[in-house]
Image (cartoon, rainbow, N blue to C red; front, side):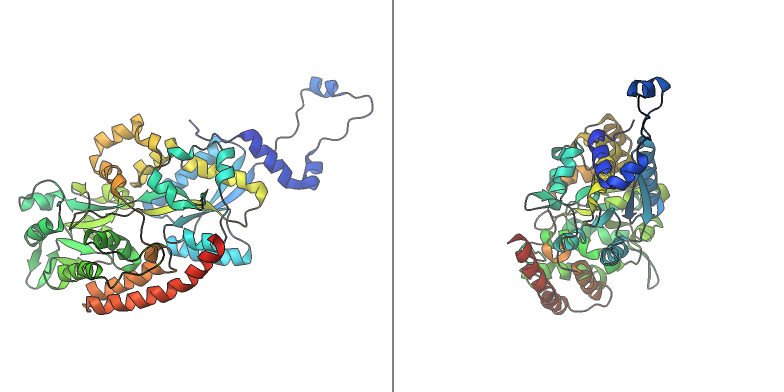
Length: 454
């Protein structure tokens, strides 16, 4: 059943206003001859021409199984009503999509709605390229309080919503149950990194000097190692930065976390860098890894072994961040199309459709009521690996400003971590350079933010 519950009268009213007098004249029936009353028209059974549906453009970033699920979601929306048509266009990964949106805004060819990742939406907010959504949410009868608090609040600035949760995730600890059983490990993830350090040597498989199976693997910068390492810094008592952009890359505990990553590869030699973490896990080349909940759909579909998921291991503390992407309306969207744009956002993030999206991709349901639904409870029974993300969500916290608000902060930190895991460079030296780079890159952001928010 459709979940499109927008106030249709309001939508049609706004569409009619936006079309302007010329369009209204074109759509109006011919004037009736003198003496020909309205009752005659009624008796003929004719009706006013139906309003043409408004088409909105959606740019997004998912390929493979997740892309198929998103295309199906758009199709469900288009078939659920006749007022709005979504033109769905794949633009590449998160970074490619954001870069294309940037160029399109300058050329005034931007989409009406775009998927924006956790590290990109703030840039568009800062450049005042996003529409505040509160009035549109209210007109569409969207219950904002039903979204997961930690997810909806990340898109709020100065009390206004700019970024609505859609494909949200957390890192999880994935493990290959067959490899666990081969060495007699309990069927669970490690509770602490210290415990995993005891298990890891047993999981490694060598042929001569070549490691055929690693106990653990790290992604590269392009695959968001900075996102996965974010929680590890917190687990060691460190952090990338404060919300006011004071950097902490050279703090003792942040360096200690970096040294841990270094040692897993170069000292203890039970972890390896990976160019494609999910594929290596699916192919049995690594026994475990931290990966996004959004990787679960592909792993479930392709892994030829049973796998488990667990909370991230602790060190001195527990640490886990949120991630993923949300939907926003670009400021170049004409006012008369914004209700239509919100209609799709409301549909895609509705309780019913977030269940569909979650079960087909592995991303978390973004609505509280969705978690309590019979469909989701049955899914948890059938596929308990998925429930781990939901249970871990209350323990997560928003990411540090250095990664998500500093332009290219994710890649700056990610490239630095690659220098440690791949090139075996000294952690303190690398993090010292990151501290300087991030501080320099943050300076214009601080100025710009002060100008916007005071």
